[in-house]
Image (cartoon, rainbow, N blue to C red):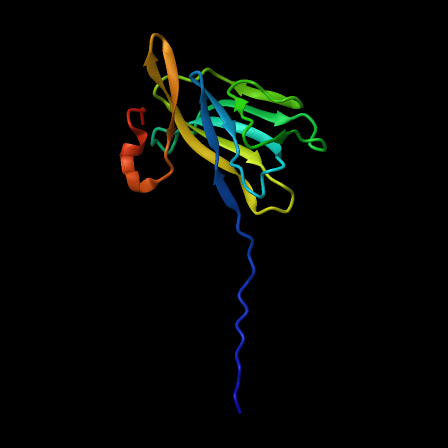
Length: 159
């Protein structure tokens, strides 16, 4: 007689984070989501949050620089690939919660909270800094997510 053993592994939901699109528009960051099957028709937008990257002191919480939330959660605005939201400009149907100007060479993180109901994707993240471009102008440097680059990925941004 052959005995078959079945092992039942617990089923757990896993959440995913995607890479936010960070675009330089005349020295100001503009934020979007990547274009793929899940995002092509836009996603309900729950908010965007920009924080200074902590300086390594675990006792200090990151400073919130800009954030907004929907006014009505039953009627969420949408975010679309290839249409970005400029830093400091809130989409219709949202309320600004915080706003501070960006500073040169500081590292910032963005979290775009956008997803379809029932999706395992919970949002999109990225890092960037503003660098001087001469003549009083700035440009947005996107910081690669590849940790194998080590500190080199921050190339001139303050850490």
